[in-house]
Image (cartoon, rainbow, N blue to C red; front, top):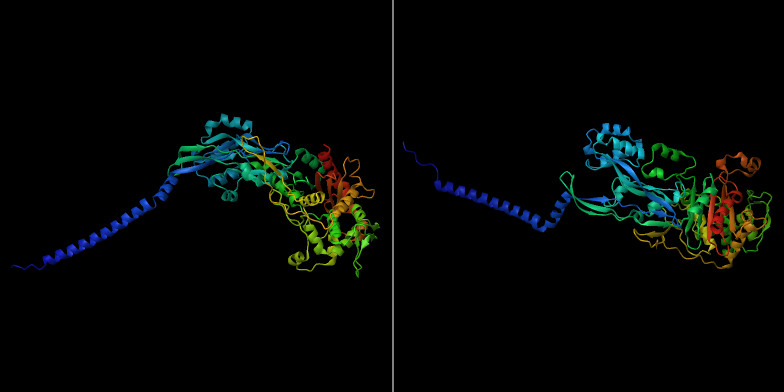
Length: 616
């Protein structure tokens, strides 16, 4: 039986054609998209992706430059680069790292600090990059390793330069030191200039002038494979050594000042009042900066940290002390300028002072009193009662303004990091910090440099320099000049910041009244530092100070005396001076912690420094 054809052949062909048309259209759309994307990548973004492609196989490696040297003002070397040997290890070339480290420990002395630093760098570095294991191998260690070199594949001894401070503790708080760069410093630094194994200035001059001393790293363009391993070096540019730095410090004077301070804790700051050059910057006790260059041993660091005398603490910049009677010339000048006192006005000193309507007594250091005192006598003999009354008559606001004009309560701007501000108390300060009103008795003791008033030795020396030069603007600074690599010419360094305007007095003769009074401190028969001036070939203007550390009431003080107190509770001894009076070339401040008498302890130290500078 014949069956008719059930399908429509023409219809089926039309369906197939439609499907082919849709498929073709889809292919055209996809092809168009692909062509558009290729055009975008190859034409519009050709430069970008070419650069990325090059970056995938090209790498820049920084070549550390030799660090600039540091000299004193006379060209004596203070910081140098000493040739030494380091032990380095390439992790991927070492089959058994633990066994290798154990074997090396039998040849060289590996401290826990060395191993700890090595493991930190091991985590941060690719396996094909060499990692320092120990710095500054001894000659014996180099020889031992050379004999056993074949036992340690992937380990080598390489020569390099290590920072060295030949004078060790001398001037360490001014110089500072370099050390291994840490993760935070590395994240902030230029990656083309520093690597995880680089050194960087940590504190002091080494830190402040880091850019100048570091120089510019050289660069190697290296071709690498997909894993980052070096295939070949394409180009090489040599590093530019750091500039040499010449300081204003005089090493001889620095050494004399440190020796004069002896084993006492304290600070000496001496500067040239004509230009602000720091001649000596002493903080004692001190420490050896060479310990820190390649990583200090944990036991050594703990010893420094736990030392009660705080050798790591920079007292010259960060020590904040009550100035005691060294503040009296500045308060006295305020009294003359405001008209609250005339130079010939006399005040009677019975040995104590009380406010009207109050029975409380503030005692003079001379318990039986000084009698009638004028301005010069009050400073020469350091009469507390005179300045109790003067401070009360001035008021705390006038005292604040007068001291601020001499730089107290603010950084001096020296080219070192970490300087503290000190403190000039005021009504506003006390209300904000303590939530209390200002009391008249607090004004009284501010007049003799006690209470809330705090100064740093640097501020005290700076203010003394302003007294010496009639407040001509200067900026205390340590950097004097630099010398570019291969050059012989020294270039003066710019000052840290521009000095302010000079302090203009209503009556310029007030400068002379203050100077005359400070000369009487050292030269008058009743001056509190008369022994300091004996035999001097030049005229000294000075002021003693004794800052109370631990307070006793008057009756208890009379009964106990100094010997009843532990040494760390004794008063601080202070002395400020400048000389020669008619043409000052040095101004200085001395602080001896728990030294007692400023005239007997701090004054002779200042005299040794002035003699060394002015007479040689």
